[in-house]
Image 1 (cartoon, one colour):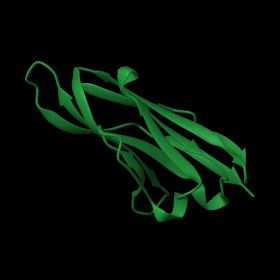
Image 2 (cartoon, one colour):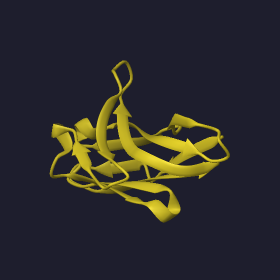
Image 3 (tube, helix red, strand yellow):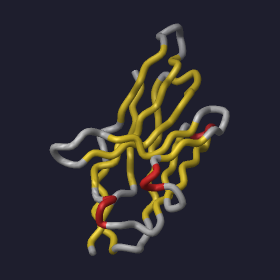
Length: 121
């Protein structure tokens, strides 16, 4: 089994910064993509940023130039540096990863439990 655990959320004033982390653990052979999503109550979950195993990056238009995704493959960890935060960035942020498990257990798409980010105006 694979677990993803996010951390780093909290309350920040508009214009401030936060850094989210997500650590993957368990029976991991390799991780293809790692992504951050966010979701507000009653709304659809939306992709914020993705980084592939080869280092390719993709961002939602709403966060380009403000957020930066990175990963540490040795630590099975993905980060999301969020700068110039706005009240509309307030959401629960979820980590998502495509994981090839070891011991012939196959490939799966895994999610973390989410971390709350609140940006006050």
